[in-house]
Length: 164
Image (cartoon, rainbow, N blue to C red; front, side):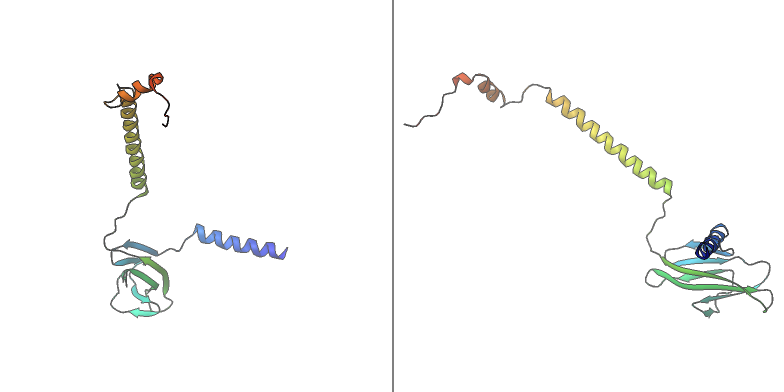
């Protein structure tokens, strides 16, 4: 009864959050040493950016460049804007992003293509080795192995070892 209603309420809130994600907040670009955040502002408005509740007075545009410290961009970033000083609109970003200098971004399709190509090349090498080995095993005996085969065929010439 009561717990079912509570569970349904929580599920409804989670569903609403999944269907309608936060609007106005965009991670525009992840660079090698920073992250570019974009605050979608409606019309002409004054923009203020905050990092961990401290205003960054250098950043007054709709985009904010969050610099990395030791390869990590971390913190709570808030963009606040309003046409007047009354009733500002806030968008908050919670970030913990690792950035690196010599990183390359691969799409999923490129990654799958590389793996598929590797499997094809490996299979091709296996098939070539198999056919080369099969062809060589049917050939005439190699030098030095003839005497062994001849001796094994004529086992009657072998005599048991006896001690004197």
